[in-house]
Length: 383
Ligand SMILES: *Cc1c(COP(=O)(O)O)cnc(C)c1O
Image (cartoon, rainbow, N blue to C red):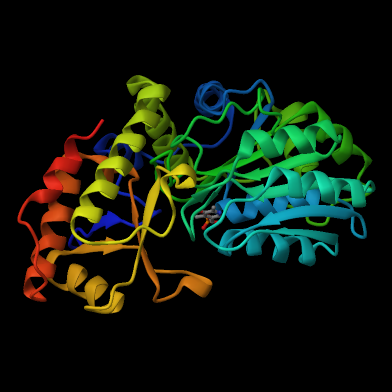
């Protein structure tokens, strides 16, 4: 068995032991009477988690595959999509739209700043022929949480199909998919859902289906929503998916969602809020500066800036070499300029947070930086 590294990365995160136990169950057939009860329970659990009545699909693969599937299934080559981008994962959506030969209208905000609903209104006026609007909710590269409800209201009122990457936010913040008019909502299993990587989830609204049905053909065989609907509808009583499913990974995801719903979705979300407040307060008391102001910082991960006394590479290496602690580095234009600390899974537990902040204090002392010992503890008790 490999040595355990404590994950403070903004995905993947360390998961509950119940989730790991589910992985070691015998392999099942992904069809027939053994699997159908699992399929049905997953479907019910996901509807609760996504707060939606829309169709739900569980697709083997990374979350990116399902984002690719959403964009490629909705917008025909040559047609227009508005893409909101303010970070690394927003750039990914652009690359996906390019791969599908779509006409892209960019709505940009600076990295570290949120997307603006007014900017979206203006772009929609200039582009009445746009079919869809895609965006990232929690831009994990900067830890900015975009104003999803407001942006969805603008896009929905204009009749656009809304495609939202909630890969690192669903489960960690409240996202009422139907109330906020998210036509296609995409999430992976190993961020705030706190299961293991390997499957991703997508909800599809009736409005999205209308547009998908007018798409002349799939841009992919596997990543076509119509294929998945066909299997669910035509084969649902025996074999509800077009491919062999990673049954253990799905059992682990089921367990992860059960853990969340046993705890209560509201409490699961509140746990992230508490953890992020504690971590911000703790790290500020150790002299770190936050990249993102609290008003639009996500409660899922915290980004702190580099400081003059040491390089972040040195800190990251020391955390790993001496304490087996992993944090996230900067991505894209933030490489070397920030580290990102996730509050996913066990990283939100007091024991993990104490360990992390104690270890940071130790590092600062080794660097002869004056620290008030244990001052960060106060942060662990903020409400
Ligand atoms: C992690 C992440 C992804 C990519 O997920 P994969 O499962 O690696 O494909 C996409 N978007 C956001 C916002 C993420 O945080």
